[in-house]
Image (cartoon, rainbow over the protein chains, first blue to last red):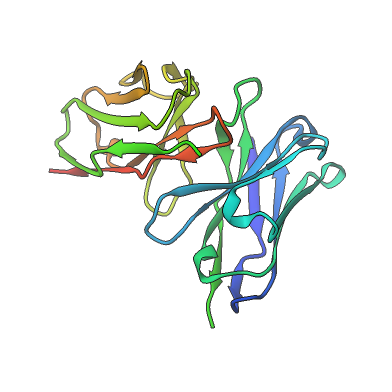
Length: 120
Length: 106
């Protein structure tokens, strides 16, 4: 069974940093692109960033460029999101999502999410 | 950036109804559109990809349609489990989602 389990969320002050992790199991993690998708409380979904199988290519939504860094450790089947210079508008549930093979950026498996709250 | 405009934002319906949700892209995205269902407090689940392809395990009462930059999700004979929020998503250029449609019980 495919599983994605996020961790690392919490309360952080504006301007602070947080590192999210996503532990993958039940599939060959190194063969897939993976993404972070977020959802502000009561709002819709927003794709944040993704990373290629071998970490050679990374993409970000404009609002996080220069502040967030996506990375992965294929030996540990793990995905990460380093978030710096956090703002109130970054408050959201952050989901780790697997991109379907051969289709494009279609998210066929999701974690349960981890809540990040940016507030003083 | 490609904007996805979804309508309606809320839809009231009864069990057994046929409902249609529309999503319009701000530019051509070819067939690069997916639909997701999200129940309260849960992660989204993919229903449709490539505009009209049904994800494995998804009931056949769900179907996708397309006409140019306008895409539709139709649910035939609405079931109790279908009351949820639905999102469209383009993946032609990076990824962006529509604002969501909440299907609620009339």
